[in-house]
Length: 312
Picture 1 (tube, helix red, strand yellow):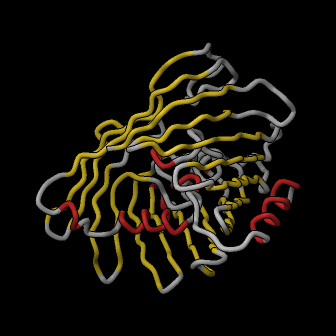
Picture 2: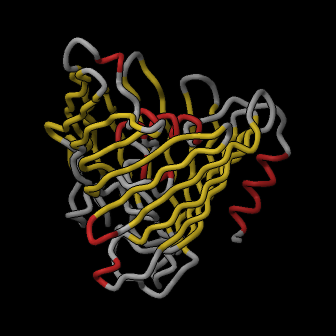
Picture 3: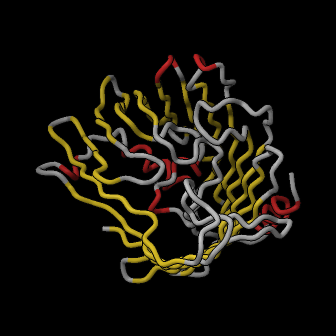
């Protein structure tokens, strides 16, 4: 385990009491469960929702869009999405009219045999970083461990038993993706959650199974989210032979409005590790962010951007 992870974990455990920050899985797994609920709060008609981010980016090696890099300084809109969701009887539905760069969500939800079901196109249940919604991300890039936010078609079963939650996704080519999480402890003191996920979503293509282990610790406004596992950038991608990629995110919630985060990522694929930072400020319906993007530890060029994301 690298020095950043050891130092961050020691700081987290030594602090005291806490409120869980943006990295806490309680919120993430609650969002996963809403995929398989009946969406009763949408009964009576469709609900329109969305988000848009506008800002400024300095020139650098990465501009936040996976399709391009080495861009000049620019004002632009970055993340954006528009969705319709609702329910009819015992069925829920969700459709992205204009989704993110990582893909669109189109799915139906229902409950049968005491199990929640999701059918359509959505994020397969792998790592927390992969499952986080675009509008909720402190950084506007992902670590890529677990799929990088890409969507998969298939059928997912999910449920919970006390502190244990499970999600099982059956995709194309007889592929299987699964996530299990366990809330070890939560409350006014130390919060600790653990998760394990695996992806065997494309056996017909000859790709090896991938797996990830995660731990989330939070205390007194500090939180540490640590992920370790295979470094394939895409669900179902060919295995690169490495299985010790890591991502560590240390966040501090200064108060209800301000949060500071740093992230170290090692894809374990021969490239340099990256170190990013972000400062978020909640401001009357919007969230301002200033951040670095893909700054390598050895000092290679990087971009810095700031902007505001508004959800509705």
